[in-house]
Image (cartoon, rainbow, N blue to C red; front, side, top):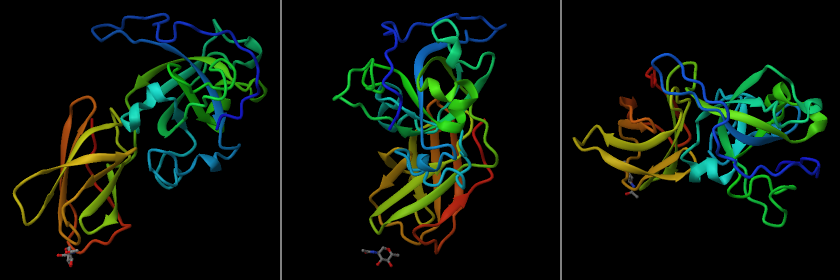
Length: 261
Ligand SMILES: *[C@@H]1O[C@H](CO)[C@@H](O)[C@H](O)[C@H]1NC(C)=O
């Protein structure tokens, strides 16, 4: 990951400092935070597919090339999967040569940028804790940085996700192991808890995060009509009643018309 040139950069010690907070009228302050960004996956982002959130093919899943792999402190064991970040080159800290000024790009977190303990965190180990770092799909990175720069200091903020259509659910696994990938979540973008209910029961059963955006339950739900209940990381709950019809098969994806606001 992160085939950034081994180019010495100034070590930013205070990585989580708010740099230039502005107060919007009757809204919470918009905080820009500092991080660095590299890129991966090739000019067509083909090698960004199938990341650690489990969204699979990012083109068909609707994420396209506006995606990023997050360092451990941001990825938070998958809790950040699906979150959206607006990222701009940090003109105060960047070499102006590598910066595209006055532009930002919004990406969805779809992957994990693992630590590389063999490399120092200021020279190649960009994703080592406690560094906030975005390893962005190359086309997204090139909106804000110049290819040859390899790595740039950035400012970022979490923003609401804008998605087309409703939340989608892909079911995999087997009897007694129902694994559901939750995709295309708007607003917060990330899911905090998930429950499932089959049509022959009145009870919601809580599901557990298995990995990334994949949640599992251990009941035998094979072929039963299913409802899901999701709570996003901002606390909004949406029920998707009978979103999965009876007779479903493993590997199928079900698109709802409902979305987080
Ligand atoms: C799980 O439930 C399905 C549908 O009722 C049934 O056909 C299947 O045999 C069950 N699996 C096991 C391992 O009991």
